Every structure is written in structure tokens, then in C-alpha cells.
Amino acid sequence: MALSTITARVSDVDKTNFDAFCTSVGLTSSAAINMFVKAVLREHRIPFEIKQDDPFYSPENQAYILKSVNELREGKGTVHELIEVEDE
Image: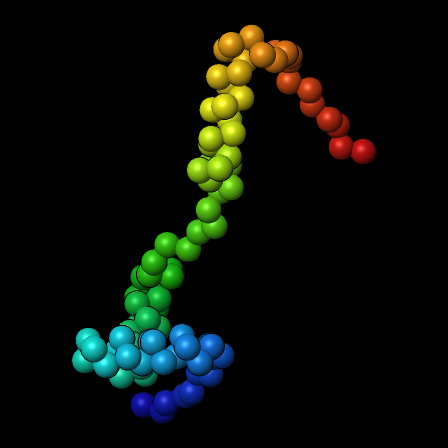
């Protein structure tokens, strides 16, 4: 079977840490990357979750919302209907 090379750019620190991790679990970096490729081909997906955290659920935003709800419950605000803006 012919072999090909995949080139990826990573920071020097990440490469050093990745190489050290692979060595610590008895793998070469090449073997670890091959395991990743095989998992993708076998599962037809990235074999781990990739997500962007929703800023709505950030601790800062949740604290702000809770504070606002409490202020409304204490009568320190104005409740109004949802105002929707139409696209121009």
C-alpha cells in the first residue's frame, strides 16, 4: 500500500506537548494521527464533539438574567410585550 503525507501546522508548544503525550501512552505522533484518520473513516464523523459554547448560557449572562428577573419581581422595571424588528 502506498503511503501519503499529511502536513498540518500547529504551534511549537502544541507539537511538543502532543509528542510528549503520545510517547507517554506508547504511540508515535504519526500513529496517533493515523488512529484519528481511521476513526473518521470508520465512523463517518469527527470522533469527538466539536461545539461552540452558546454565550447565552455563560455564567456572566445567566447572572445578569437572574438579576434582571429578580428586579422585575421586586417591581423595579417595566414589563412589556416582545418588540420584534422586521428585516429591512
